[in-house]
Amino acid sequence: MIQIRTIAVDFTEGQSIYPMLRFELANLSVGLLINNVGMDVPLGPFAELESDEEIEKIINCNIMSMARLTNILLPGMRKKLRGIIINVGSIWGTGSTPWATIYGATKVMPFKNWLWFTLITIT
Image 1 (cartoon, helix red, strand yellow):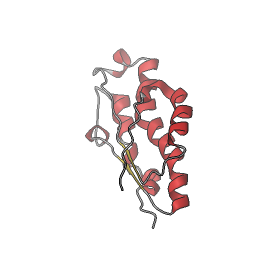
Image 2 (cartoon, helix red, strand yellow):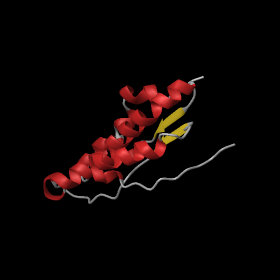
Image 3 (spheres, helix red, strand yellow):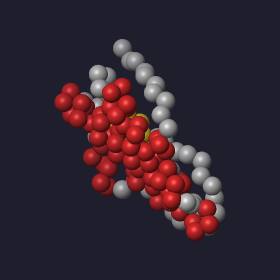
Image 4 (tube, helix red, strand yellow):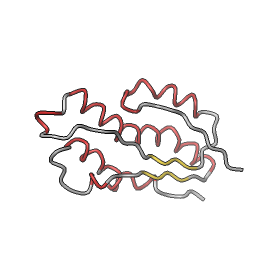
C-alpha cells in the first residue's frame, strides 16, 4: 500500500525547521524522497537586489533543504536496503544567470557529481 504524507515547511527559514522535520519523519518508512524546492526571487544585478537575508533564504531553500532532508532520510533507506532519492535541479542551474546569480548557482547543485550517490536504488 502506498501512503502519502505532506508536511508544510518554509525551507527559507533556515536551521530552525529541521528538529521538527526530524521528529515528524522519525517513525515513517520513507521509500521515495523528491527534493524539488524553489522560490520566487527578485531579478536584477547581484549588487543591487540580493541582500544578506535574501542570499541566506535562497541557500536555505535550494541547498540546505536538499542536503538536510537527504541526511535525515538516507540512513533509514540504507537500513531497509531500499529507497530512492531524486534531486531536481533547474534550467537556471545550467547556464549563466546574470539577473539571478545566487539562485542560479544554487540550482546547479543537483547536477554535480557529489550528490549522485543519492540517485541510486538500494536493492
